Image 1 (cartoon, protein in one colour):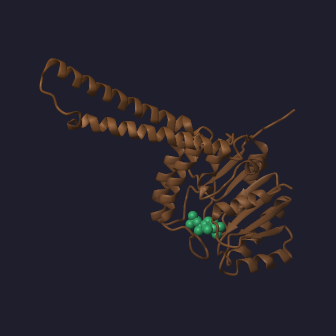
Image 2 (cartoon, rainbow, N blue to C red):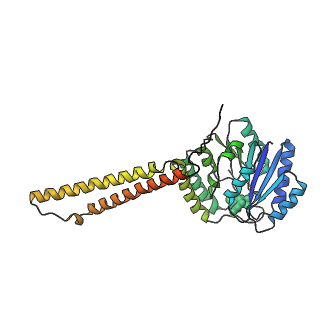
Length: 316
Ligand code: UDP
Ligand code: MG
């Protein structure tokens, strides 16, 4: 099979018939063999009914329904597991992404070495309250991940080589960072394609302003887990030991000063009257805490069933 289109959806009943029909038109015009995987993320409207009906007349459609709303990342993950096409394309269900982009995305993956081609909504049809924070978010992600050629990490329209989706796990709200996940998994050829974007035709956006706070926290965890997930002691241990050493030397200095003033017979302050004393106390305590945290984290990661999971590219 050439293409799997994975579509996560939550309360998108009005858009689905139009969207699937549009995809069918594009696929038939280019003679692609394809499947459309509609992942209903626990919709409360009649989306699932609509999917059941569409399937009757459109055999390439398959549907997966969650019992409750788990979020876009979960829906994508389940769709990725089910996908069978050589190229996997994701798009939003709300008709903001255009199926007309599919052929070019497919060609980019098949005819160049691209592992992932991410859409760039160069001209966006979203309110300013969304586009401005998004610019900031993209620039932080770009710099932290080192994927400098992407302008738009969170675009719903993306194409993946099949290996990529089978190697990454999208959870929490990590759908915003799939290119970063792909890079950590060793797929470094990440490209971008300018895509058309439309205003939402039916329904309302499913993400409120909380998206930015959660997005930022996820960014921190993704970098921490990606870099130190398999060796937490290197992170906590290093800072912990540094802090401890600083505290230790300050303490030595304080004791030395005190002994010297006793020997000189000069008037001296109590150690506890000096600001430095509190600094050393805090540094030693924090250092020990961090070290122990690293130690426990190391034990946890040693017990994880994924401790020896590596992405193997080839075996001969
Ligand atoms: N979505 C989902 N589960 C959720 C929230 C959203 O599957 O909990 C889907 C939604 O139906 C749409 C896509 O994710 O297909 C993008 O959502 P939306 O258009 O609301 O996001 P925006 O375009 O405002 O960023
Ligand atoms: Mg949308």
